[in-house]
View 1: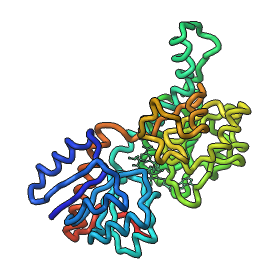
View 2: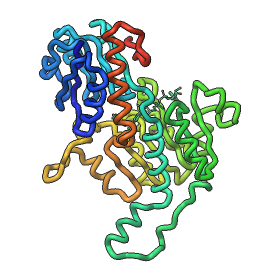
View 3: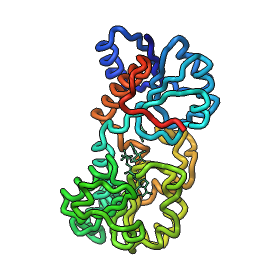
View 4: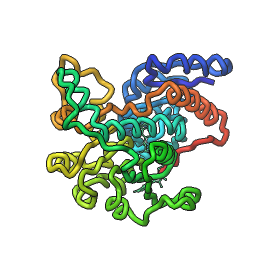
Amino acid sequence: KKIFAFSIRKDEVPYVKEWAENHPEVEVEYTDELLTPKTAAKAKGADGVVVYQQLDYTPETLQALADEGITKMSLRNVGVDNIDMAKAKELGFEITNVPVYSPNAIAEHAAIQTARILRQTKVLDKKIANGDLRWAPTIGREVRDQTIGVIGTGHIGRVYMQIMEGFGAKVIAYDPFENPELKKQGYYVNSLDDLYAQADVISLHVPATKENFHMIDKDAIAKMKDNVVIVNCSRGALVDTDAVIEGLDSGKIFGFVMDTYEDEVGIFNEDWRGKEFPDKRLKDLIDRSNVLVTPHTAFYTTHAVRNMVLNAFDNNLELINGEEADTPVKVN
Ligand code: NAD
Ligand code: COI
């Protein structure tokens, strides 16, 4: 049996080796190159592939893998919004993901950035670096004084709620599929509009689906409280970036946390030093003192990366062995 892995970063190599050592019956090969129609042939002879990338899994890419006789694909990450499912179905792909590699990694990042926005640490850092050690006017808002509105109470949203409660904040939530335990504890409001009307901080923890595209748009922002903080550590497509910029300019939005950006593919996780920055709108956001941009690094911890690699290889072996996969992705 052979598994081929694409786009393996240096920090993943020790975990690939760990898995391979524990599975001497499986031949493991890998490359640091992304899976594209051109590179798919590198997996020749493999029974399955382990992949991760923000680049789309296009019909051409899937076809190129299928041409090598490979239709068992295991993602090392959660999101599956970049796979052409119609083509995957047509080609008979079996796909797995790693839905719970470390919800804490993302929730913790979202919580840290929420607190940083409220305490204006970016402004302070800049002032201090310039030798301005005065307090005013950089006064903070305490987390415990905020009502935190969580949209999506799945794996990550739930952990974010716990962390924010640890700070002493009041937490409310909205999810069309209410978690019975959280419902019993009285967290849910009846609608997104209710959440917008009550929350001082709004944090998104929902998948990017067609229905959720630009759910945070001009209309949604208009329904929010003045001085709202918006946190998006989920997917860029959830937020209409232009609408947020308008809200920042008018002062309606106090601060914006973005770990994901609707045009991030090809920009995040690249080195732009000494080169022309490719996205003016993003550069403008990066330069604002009340916007915290991170390049989709919420997940990026040693704990998460180890689980992503080990679980994806486990999953791929299950597919190859014809066993029922633990975490199948619906291909439709
Ligand atoms: P999950 O599937 O466990 O939970 C998502 C929840 O959102 C579900 O309970 C679902 O019912 C709810 N939901 C869907 N549409 C909704 C809507 N319109 N309003 C309210 N609730 C809605 O997902 P998760 O593992 O918690 O992941 C959450 C998000 O985080 C996803 O977008 C995922 O892609 C993203 N993510 C980001 C990173 C990162 O590094 N930034 C890493 C992993 C996952
Ligand atoms: C996911 O797991 O879906 C993520 O968003 C993290 C990914 C960029 C590795």
